[in-house]
Length: 132
Image (cartoon, rainbow, N blue to C red):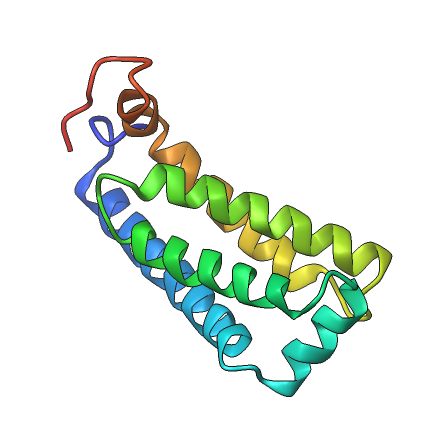
């Protein structure tokens, strides 16, 4: 479904979904950036150093902000989805805890990315621009 074929109701639902997902990424990214002890401990388990916590936090907050931008929503959703794939892998291999929250955010990010695939391809110069 591209933005041309969406009904007004579908657009509202998609905007609400974008807002919800953006809120979640701002929340979790901010917790990483301010150094909440739980996040520090999680990234200690990962073993790449605390710089990786900061990098992940910046990606999550930056991606959330771009998720609200009509021009960059598709690419932002893809970057956030890739970040959640990494989170799922780390939860399945080295980090204690359930990968379910990351899996849910992955699914939602992929749904958003799919919904904006036409504008993402146009942004990359692979198709003609779609009107929003």
